[in-house]
Image 1 (spheres, rainbow, N blue to C red):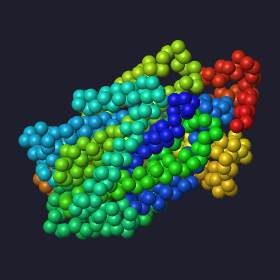
Image 2 (cartoon, rainbow, N blue to C red; image 1 turned 180 degrees about the horizontal axis):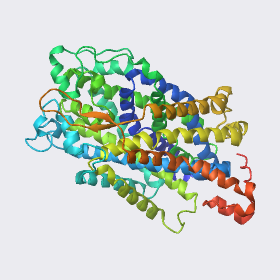
Image 3 (cartoon, one colour; image 1 turned 135 degrees about the vertical axis):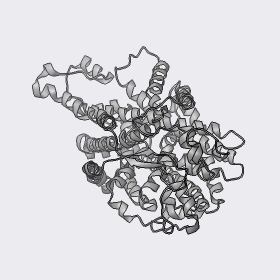
Image 4 (tube, helix red, strand yellow; image 1 turned 30 degrees about the vertical axis):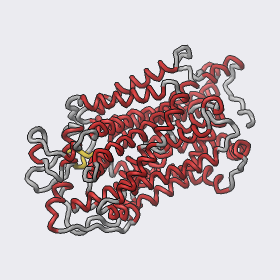
Amino acid sequence: GINAEYGEFEFILSTIGSVVGLGNLWRFPIKVKQYGGAVFLIPYFTMLAIEGIPLFLVEMWIGQRFKAGCIGGFYKIHKALTGIGFATWMIGFYTNLYYNAIIMWTIYYFVASLNKVLPWADECPQDGPGAECCTNTTRANHYWYYEALKISDDINDAGSINWKMTLSLLAAWVTCFLCMIKGIKTSGKVVYVTAIFPFVALLGLFIMSLTLEGSFEGIKYFFDPTYTFTFEETNATVANMIVGNSTAGNGTKSNWEELLNPYCWLEAASQIFYSLSLGFGSCIAFASYNPTKTDFYRQTIGISIVNSLSSMLAGVTIFAIIGSSAVKNQVPIDELSTGPGLAFIAVSEAIATTPAAPLWSAMFFLMLFMLGIDSQFAGIEGMMTALDDTTLVPKRIPRTAVIASFCGLSFLLGLPFVMSNGLYIVDLFDNFSANFPLMMVAFCEVTAVSWVYGINRFCSDFEAMTGYYPNVVWKSLWLVITPISLAGILIYSFVDQFSNPIKYARFVGCQADGSGGNWTVADDYPAWGWGLAIVLVFSSFLFIPALAILAYLPKLLGPSFEIEFPLVLAKKEKEQSGGLEMQPAPAV
């Protein structure tokens, strides 16, 4: 219970630590830059209002109401909905795998920042891959691709194991294990550091970023959809060396047309899900430790505001730094490095030009590490709490052993991320492991609560637990607007995928002759890549229809087809009555 081992302040810190993570400081700026700069803020805040907060309230209610993780919670609503919980578990598992790869990169760069001179600001290497085209203006790119990642030229070329990255990945999973060794009792104390320090560091970086020359160019780009950045014709050659064949003059164009791009809305919705940790099971898990009468409505609104303000502060900070880099190199902001390398190229390059650069760099990557590790605590706690509701893991096995086994297995499954094509695999996971499945699960979540459990019953519970009865606006969101918006984005994105399939950024390297050339080019995924993408999408979602069918088999074909779900509650119900139908949940 919350009073016994998890005080309310620790709950707030843990939830903030869960929702304010790499999604805010790493993923959010990437998506802003990828989908039209300030234009992306329109679908972002729209999705926050009509999907993010309504679903956050639903997940908080499920955990606090049923005192269970995602699997047990949906089972208690209705047996046929158990698949939603298993799908949520799988999404959380896939996301934790590749999020720790990003944490691996932050550990690598943090250690590199402990040098007196930052390696990506030091002299170019005289030999080795890409050495012939490394210059002062391309040093950060060279370090990221050639020295840190040791990247291959194609997703099909796995290359060799990067041992430094392997050690960094191992450190990430060992940290997760040590901080989760006693579950909530441990992580509830760790968050005093991991949830508070990043805000202090982010504030310091924000102030520092405003002192950089050209920082306000980046801030304008972040807030003004019509902003245009121009640079000198005489510096076109330098620009070409950094970003490729860009044209001098008008760099950034108005990107209103991005609002017609279905992926812009899909990414805005998934970004809200990432930043609020919705659909991963962690919010349900943390809320299950709340006393039944806790005002989760107040907590949800407060945490959502903190999360969005954090994203905006992170956005201003990152784009102020990017703006400085753009002005320094006379490169349009749109043309600077994007994707996973945004923080590791554009931001690290700009930080390298500041006084006491190693200190600021170490602070930045330590902040990224803590933001990421906080989200990992939440993800693992969500999965462990869900497993507690099942009979899949024998209760005689100590929780510490379960967590150790989980972290060890996850480390082994994460080894493809340390290969030479690891960046491509991380990008594939980012594109497919959560985006589509999250939307599917979210649609099922809100539909299950509003239409299966019943909106009036849900609202009565809501009032009994918080003292507030949801008004007609909230009811409209849960019943109609949220599920329709989720379904619309999903259908639109799926249809568009056939005509405009997602591509990956294949590395082509820099060019020594100064004629330009992008560091990456868009290329089609190979057949095995699409096969993996299909597995990532449907291996989670198919639990929903599969377990729903199994739940109704006895009704359709007779009692001999009854299958006992691997859940503690299901076992108890069978021992008590042997019946299929669930009893209504007791009143709050």
